[in-house]
Image (tube, rainbow, N blue to C red; front, side):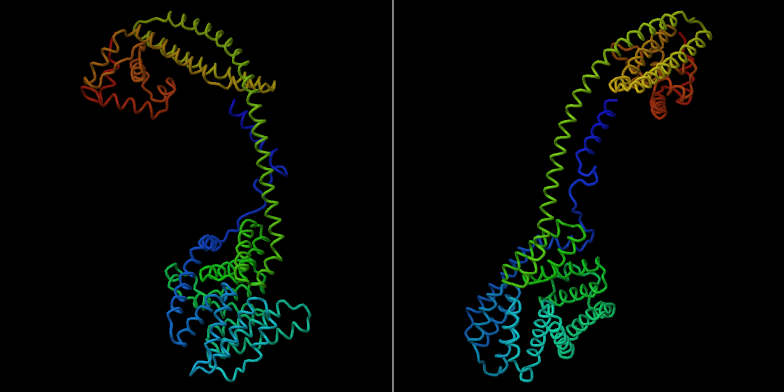
Length: 550
């Protein structure tokens, strides 16, 4: 009764403490169920580890540059350092680009001036200096440079015009930049490696409304799953290609309007960006916006903070501006969620305090009704004494004794059942009167347990009056180490009561279990255990018990 009453109070208080009638518990943030996001979370947590590896590569290149004596070797070291820093720390990339420029010209490498100009345009694009970048690219003569430099030139032009297309508002100028971007995509497709050409072509198809064609074109380059060992063995160039492939797939699904696929491929892009350790990227803050729209505020806030930190460290002005556009919205939602959680915790603490007070009141009621129950038990005790007096008058000879004992047992068990019915009737009266404390007290089965013990004690007395030597005779049927010793203060224990009933002719396991209040399995186990300790034939053991005389 007490447990039931407490449960009602707990649920009522929790319902009152929760906002909006208990419709939500810990704010409105819910985690978006996509396994790739868990992998991305792990990569973000390991960002410092990835960064340490990159810094180790950069340190090794700097050591190599410090010991390089010849201009070509120094030039290659500076170029490698520029590539490491390009999307990682723009000002350092410019430093090594300027150092490369001081090493020119190099004999046998006529297009290095153009190469430096193209790389300078690339780093200016990272820093958001698009006009300066285009000014440099316009000075490059594509007809006078080698194949690899020409590819870099086309990529730089496509990137610059693509950025200008995205961030130009005037429609006519935007269309002009879009046309130039498409032209350089075609140039990449014709002059670059097949995979880069297909990425450029897929991008164009996605932006022109042919997203399904773009997806089919890219899927052959995207394995369904890349195991960790394969990821570890990939070169930085392969990782970069995987990043571009997944981002282009995102653009295709953006054109189709499939949000879940957008999230998946942005997450894959961001994962590759984390693993190749770049700080200038578009994937993570766009993913943060999508997750915010889907209600995953915690992840959106974490991803946006990571994007802001990396953009500032890289000096990527454009990415910083992109992040600051969405940051106030997500930051406000995150703070509102935290405030909501604090309010819920405060409400729960208040509810617990009220619950404690309610329990004190409930205990007081319980004590009151326990006193009433004690008076009821005294009345029942007097009735039980009268029943014992009747039992003492039963005849104790021959078959008549056994018949009257069986009736006595049935009568006592029936009396216990009547007491249970009486308890239930009192419970109904209590419920009708809405007396919760009485309802608790009367539900207690302690009284029945005490009366059952008293009943078994009376049974032991009655049985031993009829068969005073039963224990000694019973033990003679058992091996020495299997004999049953009754504890001090006891007349019969559970095993002896089972076989006392068998002596009286009650051999049915159901009847014995009903009389003793045990399960069928328990009674069966007791019978089997004692039977296995028999001196003679175990199959005839119970027949020998039934033959024990006075």
